[in-house]
Amino acid sequence: MSARNEARLWLAQRATAALLAPCVLVHLATLVFAVRAGLSAQAILERTHGSLAWGVFYSAFVLAAALHGAIGLRTVAAEWLGWRGAGADAASAFAGLALALLGLRAVAAVVL
Amino acid sequence: MRPARNHPGWWAFIVHRLSGVGLALFLPAHFLVLGLALGGAAALDEFLRWSERPLVKAAEWGLVMLLAAHFAGGVRILALEFLPWREWHKALAAVAAAFALAAGLVFALAR
Image 1 (cartoon, rainbow over the protein chains, first blue to last red):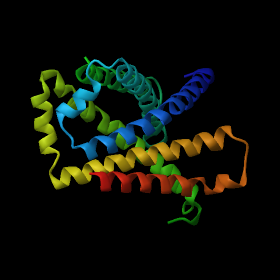
Image 2: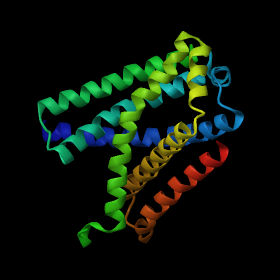
Image 3: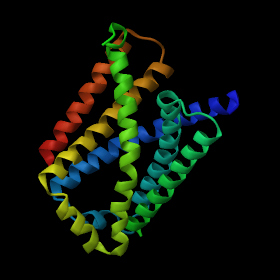
């Protein structure tokens, strides 16, 4: 990968981190609130079903996490396994795509 | 352990890498469980009842710690890279660890 594209990935990793940080704080607060109220499908779905706000929030959270996770896994593969090049790029892109699709499916399951 | 590795910055780096990989491995399972709601609330409830087991609860707590640690470590990196150098940068690893522990404690008490 060219140095320019490596720099783009570095920047994308920081940009997604900046977006994920407030999302994680909201998620941690929601977790504590949800477990205190007693975890049940009804309680979860009552909060999320038909909610445009939660739909937009979780979709952005999922897409940012998928991109962040893919870039992070690519970095770890290079650093710790010495796995670089087109194969590692393709595998991390596949991981990101799988995370995005599974995540959006989960968002649809609780929001729609 | 080699002395060069036994310092807060190195530990912060290791925790950030390991928590990141842990979260990436956990996320597909998390998404699949939430996707159970596609089959109706009963399917999701069945899983939630299973998750009441003590070992599963302990694993849940571990996941919350991973998320809190990765969050705090990530904010530390952003501060180191994007903010001008300050003396308090040295304390950031301790602040990150304290945040993760506090989040874990709050979750454990709530659960």
